[in-house]
Image (tube, rainbow, N blue to C red; front, side):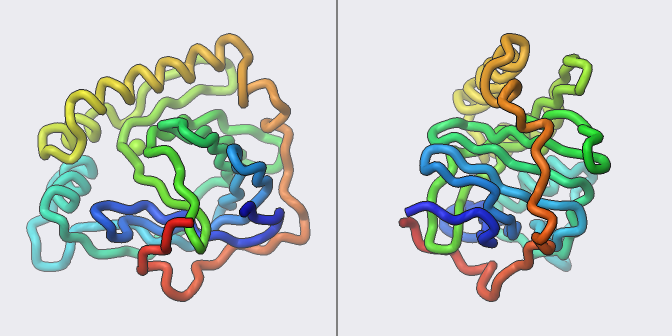
Length: 213
Ligand SMILES: [Mg+2]
């Protein structure tokens, strides 16, 4: 039950059985327990935001945490800003994103802490867990969105045990990079999309939870 290269799939983030975010992506590779998904610059996707009429918190972390804690959000149209290939292994609490500013010009590696991916009838599902690690091309690294994870914990969206697990997971990926382990020395930095691929487009029904499969 794998997808073929070039197929457009829907990656849904889900929260309490509802869609939290929706991104169309092109399948670059699907080996069952490993998936590579292409999410090019300019792709239109749906991001969560504070519903109209509710006070808008000052920081993004507070805004997202409040929406999740109150189980109420709206969607806003968004456009992705950088060519990105998302690498996902079954069971991992993260994805590794490779991004390019221009063809052949790698921006770096972005480690997105998230729930292990699940397969659905329209593609894949996960949930972003705020914290990220950025690994630059020169090998230096830094945390991103530490404050957002703190907001998630404060609002009871992520429990402290999971937050600690995410920090350990992030550090383990930094170690893998240092040791040249998967996926950092597997040629992904030199990957290029099929030139015939157009931008992936959101399918009808992107806001309905796709069934597990
Ligand atoms: Mg983040």
